[in-house]
Length: 225
Image (cartoon, rainbow, N blue to C red; front, side, top):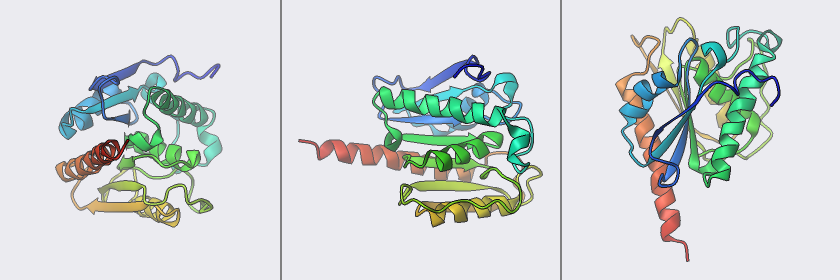
C-alpha cells in the first residue's frame, strides 16, 4: 500500500498470543485516540483471555478528516487508506489461521463507523461486528446495496446514546436496517443519558457476542474428525 500513511503507524497486540488464541478481534479506535484507548475501554473490560486483540493505529490519531456523514469525496483519500489498512490487518489474521469467520471487528466512534464500512464493503461474513456509537458512512440520502447474502446470520451489535453529539441515533438505526436487509442478525440498542462513551451494558452484550464466537469454534473442533 504505497503512500498509505496509516501503514507506518504502530500495530498493537493485546490479550492471548495468536499461536494460542481461539479467536481474534480487530480493535478500531476513535478520532484523536490510539490503540491503548481501545485496550482500556474494550479489551480489558471484555476480560476474555482466549482472544488475541490487534489494534491498528491511525496516522495522527485520525482515520479520515471530515465527519462520517460528509460526502465521501471530502474524506478521501484518507478513508480509502484507512479501509485498506484494516483490510490488510484482517488478511494478515487470515494468513495466521484466523479467517474472517474467526474475527470480530470492534470499533468506537470514528472507529465504529470505519468498522461498519469495512464489513459492508468487504462483503464477507465476519464472526461479529460490534460498533459502539457509529454507523455506515455517507451523507443523508445515501443508498446502500442489499445485493448479497454473504452476511446471513452474522451477529452485529450497534448502539449508543440517544442524544450523542457526534453520531445521530437515526444513522445507527439506519445502519441496522441496511445490515438486516443483507440478512445479518442485528441488535441495536440506544440509551438515554449515555454520553459519547461505552456503557457497561454494551460491554456485557459485546462479551456475550464474542464468547459466542469462541463457543462456535469449540463446537466446530469437537465435530472435526
